[in-house]
Length: 284
Image (cartoon, rainbow, N blue to C red):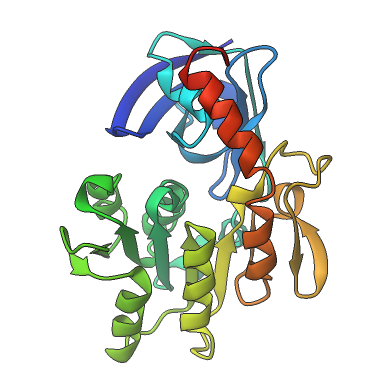
C-alpha cells in the first residue's frame, strides 16, 4: 500500500498529493510518469510525476477531476492509501543526459497550459538548479485556475502568467505571449510545451520557422502505460510511436496533432457514463 502523506486542493477540481513510494522517488527523473489504482479492481491511471523527494521517499502527483477514476483519486484524504503505484515509467526528458556544464547558461522556454504546469515544474526545477536560464509561460482560463504559481516562480528566471479573461497577468492565450517574446527578440536554445493537445498544436505552429527546437509531451494520450492497449498510438514524423513507452516527449514539429486530437475523443461516451455512475455512487 502507498500512503498519501499530504493532500492539498489547488483548485476545487485539482488536487496535489505527496505519496510514500521510496523506490519510485529514488529513481524518478523529470519527464517520467507513474500509474496508480484507487482500488484493486480499478483502472490504471497514468499521472505525470510533478515532483519527487528522494530523502523523504515521496513522489508528488497532481490530479484533475475529469472522470470517474480521477474523481475517486481526489476524494481520498491524507492517511489513505493506493493499493498500487507503479513507476517511474516512460523516458526521462532528453536534457537529463546532458552534463551540468552544458546545461549551465542554456536558455529554455517552457509553455504550460492548465494541468501541464505540473509536469513542467520538475523539468524547470532540474534545469534551474543546474544553472540553465529558464523562462516559463503559464496559462489558464481564469486566475483561480492557475496552479503552482509560487512554486514555479522559485524555479525560473522569469514567469509569464496568461489568462483567457485577463483576471491575472497577460490577457490572452499563451501563444500570443510567445509571439510577443519572439517579437522582442528573445532567444532560446530549446522550447518545451506541455498542456492541452490543441494548445501544443498551436505552440508548434507559432514556433515553426523560429529555429527553436520544440519538445511536447503526449502524456494525455496514455491509458495503461505499457504500450499493450494501443491507446497512445500516434504518428510522429510519419512513423507510428507509442507515447507511454517511447515518450511521452517527442519533437513537437513532427507530431500529427490532428490525429492526436481525434484519438482523445475515442472513448468520451464511455468516460461520461462511468463518471455519471461515480457521481451517483454506483461506480465505487
